[in-house]
Image (cartoon, rainbow, N blue to C red):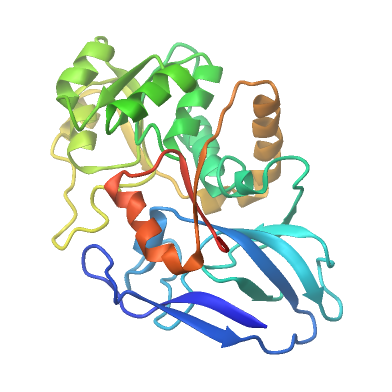
Length: 334
């Protein structure tokens, strides 16, 4: 059996290029005692993957040179050997990486039910992005009814769920995204109260228009100038959730930090980073709640699916050029 996979070949400086990964095909070795073989159907593409390629201190070790590119995945167990935590026929989600088959002890994988939700939902709203949104806005953002919530990357995998949860909890929600299509998606499909198109309008003017009395919670997925703009408008005791900084990930120079941080002092505000891995013990409860909201029609999720493991690099670029809508997923086989 041949395994197709994408290996990290070198650590990129700036945007990854054609030499960042190597596409290889290798014959799978027989399973060892306690191992499972998963035929993977889809892998998740997330902005965090760019950080995992850097050899620098972070919340998780970097991907090693020559290793399979780290990624969340879903698939079906097609073979086991000995005493294993899964059986043949189980559908599982975990850190299978960008490859057609996963072989290992299954550590970090969980069983999922394809009858409960579409399999790709376990990479999106019921996976890492959804968990990030859930715990980020509820536990770090500490939203309450009546809060004004601003979210950047509002049409993305995390931001779209953040905004909808905030609406469910009785907040006024404004999303920032690039382009009229994404802005219409936020207001017309997801129920946001307003949208700011950072590509075609001034963000500061947009925030002033939609949040005339200021912001209680800003959920930041992009960093840079948009974070600085949000800081201008925070209210007393505002909370800023630092989830990501996609505008900075491919910088060849130092990361651009906030210039308006003194607004935190004046307004007694807080800025706190969040990493979803801190909340793993609570995932099951969050998934139950999110599934209930989906069943009730209160929470919508969109996956943008592309095909072919050979096309991983070009699909990965969509994370940074904005050419996607919702959760970016790669289907292993066309």
